[in-house]
Image (cartoon, rainbow, N blue to C red):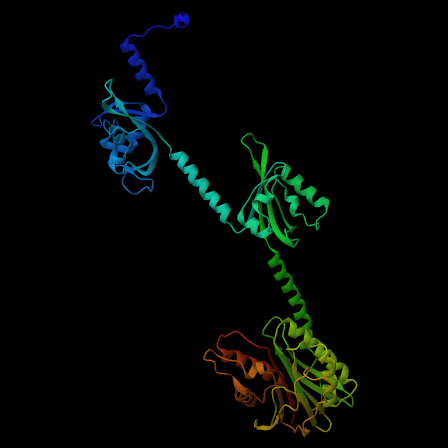
Length: 510
């Protein structure tokens, strides 16, 4: 053992000190040895570079030049001088790694320093100074901040996120994915996304998916998945390959956006569009061309589809049936009921031309189909053009009116019975028949006209409707119908239309 070090070149004390000093100067970490007053005895190159930026001194010689630039980790509050590592070391404390934020006019963006310190003692154990070792951790802090920001973004995003390894083993899912699928992170880790397989897509679909991502391409599609409770949901999925530093794919990131409700809405809108197209065909029923009379009707639904109804029906004996109705509520349910009402009314009008019998038969057919809170009001007029006789029956509908040639109300066609759909085996009755003289007008309305409101909650009302018809009685029947709608909407002063608006005008020509 004695000759183990026989080849070592002995150093003189001064040479050993210089070797030590040289070693310290070459260290990548900053090293400062200071005396009791904080003056630097040794300040290596790495320390000088950091302190020059922190103190605005090219060759800093004491800790005092550095103190005013030090901030607590909040980056704002000055670091108390007595708590700095160099000060604590002079008090005899060995200080573990402490982060200090440095900012001044020379370094406005700031830098982060991690420092540790210990007291420097002589052979008698007396404190003669301090040794501080530190390094610039700004890049690490910036990276940590970025990682935290990205982690928070992933954790808090509303879209589900999965990270798998190259073979598809799940390593991470975010809370949104847990909420969407019903699976917890613990249940999913170590499994594969096949746990969500719904059976909707065939094997070829998944083969294409894997071929795409393994080739380094991004895969995008809407995929049907299955939740933990068995429910199928649709998701817009983007699967992105992640490349390692070596240039190989080592992970996949999948972003899942649940679009189930959106698809339902789109499907509903599509169905509503079809229903509206069908219903609009009913609203474009050809206007009867009858000598001595001019007729027109129009319906303006509050939604894409509506529950209002008007019709002109050919009756035996060259007579014409004029109908206007209102199904409770509005929207697609009311529209479907309106279609059913129209079908029954037209069918029974071929069996009898009497208004009361037609309503009786229609009611009997509807009663078994209507839900408890559903009903329909309807006024049906039977017009004999030859004799100008007008008979009618009204199942709880808004009153109709006959205006004389001067525009004054000659007769009110009040309701003669209950609405359709309330009672089975109920026999409806007619009102008294009358004559529609030359120059007179038959006006049939729905309550979407009379009950339309403006912002102060005042209703358009029956009188306003009659006044409009009176003032425009010399115009065509179609112009009166369309103009009345425009007058109602103008009265509403920008309020959304809350109910279907429908009107029928029949003019007896002079």
